[in-house]
Image (cartoon, rainbow, N blue to C red):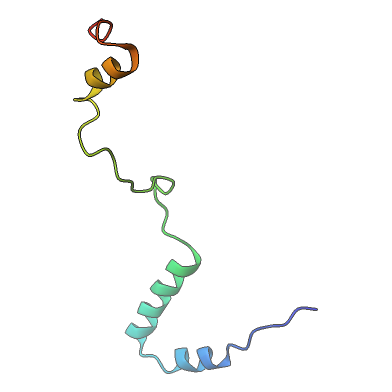
Length: 72
C-alpha cells in the first residue's frame, strides 16, 4: 500500500505568494527537481598535485626508470 504526502500547507503558502515571489519559488523548485544541463556535469573539482606535473615529468621518469634512461 502506498501513502500520499499531504502538501496542503505548501499549496496554501504558494497561493499567498506575490507573482514575483512565485517566480522565485518556481526557479528554486526547478533546480531541485531538474538540475541545470551542463556539458561538464560528470567532471568534479579535485585537488591536483602541489606542483606542475609537466615540470616534474623528468624527475618522475628518473625515479621510475633510473637516472641514465630519463633523458631519452
